[in-house]
Amino acid sequence: MAHDSPFYQIVGHPGELHFQLQSKTTPELTLRIPTNVDIAAVIEVLSNKSNSEFDKSISDATAEELQSIAQRWTTVNEPLTHMNFLVRHNEQPLGIAGLGWIGPVNSSDAEDQAERAGAAGVMLQPFARGKGYAYEALRVVFDYGLRQLGLVEIRLGSHSGNLPMKGLMEKKFGLQPAVGTEESVDQFGNNLLWVVKREKWLSINN
Ligand SMILES: CC(C)(COP(=O)(O)OP(=O)(O)OC[C@H]1O[C@@H](n2cnc3c(N)ncnc32)[C@H](O)[C@@H]1OP(=O)(O)O)[C@@H](O)C(=O)NCCC(=O)NCCS
Image (cartoon, rainbow, N blue to C red; front, side, top):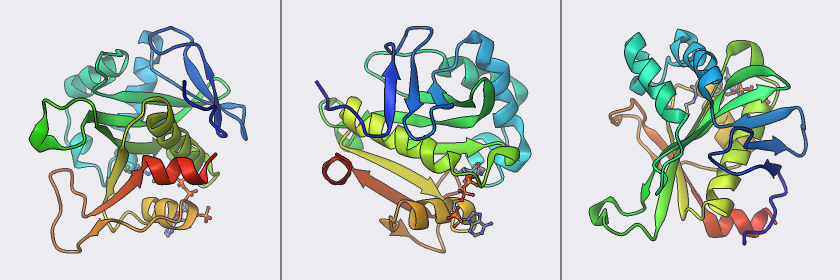
């Protein structure tokens, strides 16, 4: 049984309708797996072009593709392949945060499901930015993935031109990118990659 997180309380269990992670420092802030009633809110976040300027995975998606992404997020599968949350302040949706991918830590050994990793992201509507909610949501996601799901590491990719994201990772989390090249971008348009390791995270956040 994992040690309690210093950052959030877990309400319910994944798959249950009322499952959510509630911030301990900002109790009005909650992360929950979208239900059918949240699909419109998720699509609103994903379809806002000012949210996807640096995110090639969704900036060119059609309305049907966004609908299908949001629908997929309402499901919790076993083994987990993703765990994305709607971030809310009281009842108001602010954005999304979560693990868009969960899988074997070593992609060359896709059969080995024992050691698993995740890829994280966060996206807040412009009105919700600059208030520390992105930091709070992301540290909940990091902690849930590493502590509760037992992931070995969580990766987060971004583009060096995304100054708010760079500031969030480097100034707020104090993390330097493991990979950073100005020249080459990956298929998602990212040229920076941060890696948060479970052992290190748990040793400094207990
Ligand atoms: C990335 C994002 C989640 C950051 O959220 P945020 O609430 O704006 O975060 P903050 O304002 O707290 O910024 C975090 C830090 O970045 C820095 N920062 C913010 N905006 C900046 C800018 N325009 N230029 C330089 N630094 C900036 C600041 O140092 C800030 O720390 P501070 O609060 O101590 O000043 C938000 O901008 C967003 O949703 N963007 C669109 C989606 C996206 O690009 N997501 C990243 C892909 S994973």
